[in-house]
Image (cartoon, rainbow, N blue to C red; front, side, top):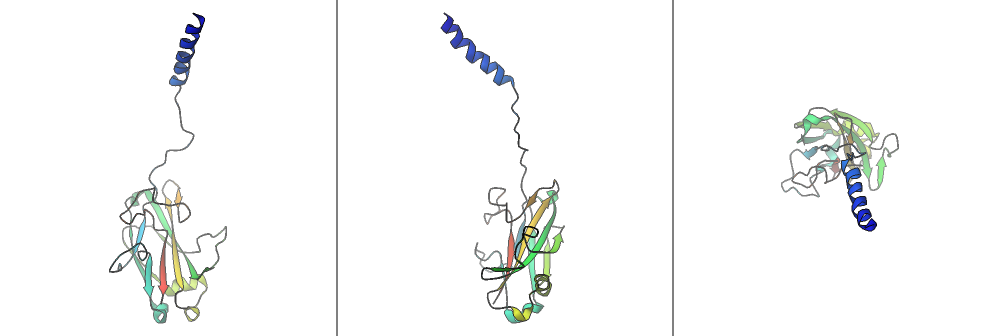
Amino acid sequence: MKNIIKSTFIPVLLAIVFGSCEQKSPFPEIKNGANFVALPDPLPASVTAANVNTITVALTGAASASMSFTTKSQNAVEIEKVDAYVSHVRGTTVTPAATTAAPHGVMVKSITTLNGKEQLPVSDLLTKTGVTAANLKANDRIRVRFVATMKDGRVFSWQNSGPGITVNPLGTTFTPLLDVLLQ
């Protein structure tokens, strides 16, 4: 009889104790991440995952060219700003080199109005990186990285964004960068 009482009483008691306690997660509720997409303007004739982030510019006209792109966001009202940072890439060498203090490059512009067109003169981008048009070579890239700051203070960049947030038709939710490819 004792065994029957123990085998019945203990599970019932545990169910009452643990079932009545409200379990609260120690982690904050995760809201949507930054949905920010920057696309070359105009888009390539055939958009692929390989060219959707590339704006091709003739090497001879780089100093007078502009990097034009369109921004899109499904949750623009939740995004405070998107900062654009620039660096020059030649092979595996990035100028300026990423540091702990400046992991994204040199700040170029804060974009506060999304779902529109933006234009950055290539000469301004070169000035920020410290590279002159005379020093450019074919296949160099001028890379613009985007860092989105949400109104609640969360920050999204190439370091912490991925397709698991909110997916757009190209399979990404966040455009971490655009490249100006010099040819």
